Amino acid sequence: MNIVVSDELRTIAPQYVGAAIEADVTNAPTQPELWAEITRLTQELRASFDTTSIKERAGVKATRAAYKAAGKDPSRYRPSCEQLCRRVLQGKELYTIDALVDLGNAVSMMCGYTVAVLDRDKIQGDTLTLGIGREGEPYEAIGRGPLNIACMPVFRDTEGGIATPTSDNVRTQCDMGTKRVLVIINGYDGRRESLDDAAAYAADMLRRYAMAKNLVTSVFA
Image (cartoon, rainbow, N blue to C red):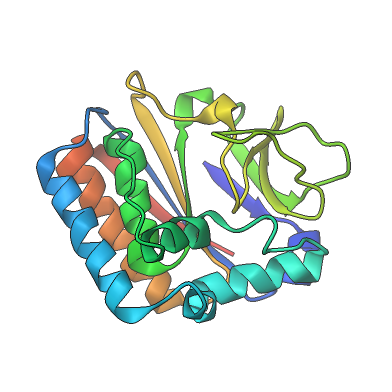
């Protein structure tokens, strides 16, 4: 997969760097070992942050700043990592979906970055472009329905938007039939070392819990 960062995205987040992981996978119900890992990460979050201080975590803060620079209210359209962490910090339990979705949540909690977990076979074309959403641009968000992505960072394939920091699109969501996955980790803070750590962790999780093979990791900016 070729990923292009547009000039309009660079104007709001010139330091942006991302990681993409492609792999052949076998999705399955979440194993107890994966849920134990999520429980450990939950405990670490609660020991380190609260619902106010989580906004100062580097990845969350930088993503919120990108929203503001583009003209989007990050408190109304919270980045998914912040949504996830706030739920944990409010004392609420997370829901288990399946191995691919849950390991993506684990990666996000581990690194503080938004993480897109996409079915590679549902993506149209071999190039994604990271740009800014437009007024009236159609987008069906997972678990949210129609989402106003105007002034929001968005990855587009040849048919339109498939992933934003707030929510992925239902069109490319993973399910039990997913055989190939594309995981995108968004480093809006530009910290390459943190991004590399997150990508290595994601690759390890894919191998352990989704039987990943033919795994390829790349970095783009």
